[in-house]
Image 1: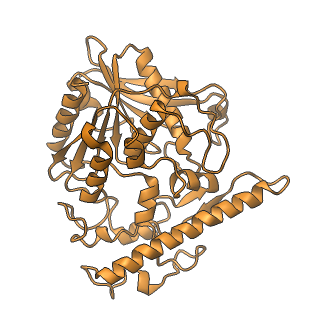
Image 2 (image 1 turned 30 degrees about the horizontal axis):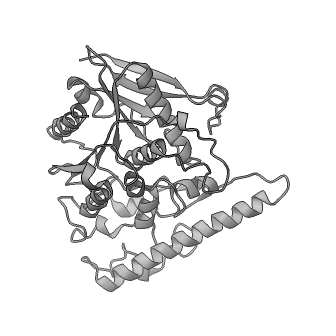
Image 3 (image 1 turned 90 degrees about the vertical axis):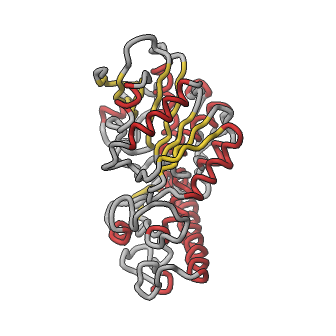
Length: 373
């Protein structure tokens, strides 16, 4: 087995990291871990998530065994998405692609796992045609085509459709007071025992409508607050805030909805407990980060961006996943058109956790795809 190596990558000169660390701000760097197989440097992959630490990703070693250098790359926002801007995350991903190209790899492709799927699609769409010249709040991104060298393919696995769609599907519409995590409208509380599984169509329709309404209210508040801050002399240009209860997807408890091989609950445990937890998806964010990641104004929607790309694509569907579903698969396949194919990893949960026999299946499918590029 090749030795695990550390990649230390300087990001675009002059780009300060959004961090309290003076070292990081003054010497902007990101970090990755990879195994380089012996022999010619033909094929390399990057697996990256906007915020999760992928330096120990389960595909790094299996892909190295199959002749593919796989780098688990961390963005500048590793472990904290409070101020995460998707437009900066693709800049970091571009630095990783440049690193592997400079190392001599003939082909480089992206492995978009979980939340990294929409990131990979956003990256390649912008690499093929740069349109993200401004953030959703209106500030310039200062992205340049040279920051985003195109890759040769995209492999997606356990692939979320993007943070904007996750928030749309997961936000709890029963919250009645944005400043009180315990406030609740029982008529919209999917966890209230009076709403029995399977949920009836009327409840689901009211639930979905209320989800959209809450999300729209928060988004409009962000826009109004930014306008006020930026119109006030001496005021900061951004601020943080809390979004309570962001894990209320009826599919977590009603397995008749979007059915696959999953077990009840969330990928993080009991769904209701996750919903009320102090640290969950999008819980703490800033105005600009909310617009870039979670809002309808986000430029990082997965299928929308994938449809703009021209490279070959592979989709691995983990059929026991508790957070991606048949409708998720269908959305990716529709976006990929003739240039995407699906492989089912039967019974696979979101992380293939406790399923060591399934990891080689995923690695085999990705390796076959990579060697065809």
